[in-house]
Amino acid sequence: MKRLLATGALLGAALMPLLLQGCLPMVAAGASGGALATFDRRSLGTQTDDETIEWKASARVGEKPWENVHANFTSYNRKVLITGEVPSEQVRMEVESIVSGVPQVQGLYNELTVGPVTSFSARSNDSYITTRVKSRFVDAGKFNPVHVKVVTEAGVVFLMGMVTQREADAAVQVARTTSGVRKVVTLFETIADSKAKELDVSMPRSNPPAAPPISG
Image (cartoon, rainbow, N blue to C red; front, side):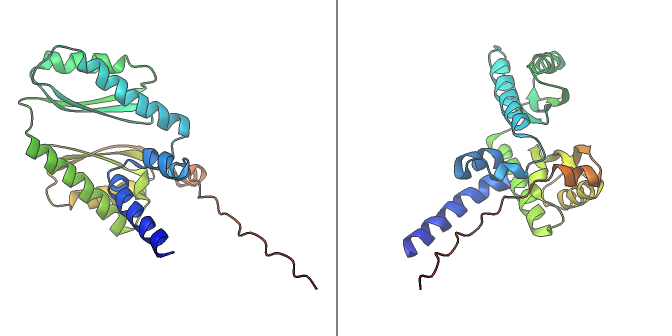
């Protein structure tokens, strides 16, 4: 029994960083057959499309013989955020054109900047900021952090998700007051409270097994 409890604690500790970094759908699929992914307001089909869009965009841009290009692709509800650094405005627009041609893409936010590629330490700091923002979402307890995707580039925090106005305001307030954040950019799809309730799906509750009949 003690061994089972220890294993469970270790699994929880391993999954927590992934949860805080917004990797819930992948974790859910591996850990509990996709059950946790039901908390996402996107359908499972849309979540799959978003993951496919991200790797296809990365692969297509990676095929180009460009130098000094650092580009990240984040898709939410088939709308793609491109962040990073490129050497020229021409490359910036070419990257946008490539990504817009990926199947299923329905919108695009080109936040690439023209300039030198950021250092490894700068990217590590961005990852830390993302984790801190997600952690503070949990601490604040004002909305389900699964509904907000956080991307940080050069200290700029981008927020994506399908959220109500109340949830959006709370997320922005937390992000803006997080140490190291230079700026917050909101790319939310704002939905009505009624729509949020319609999309939110609770974890199914398993009924305990019935007690065996007592024989007389």
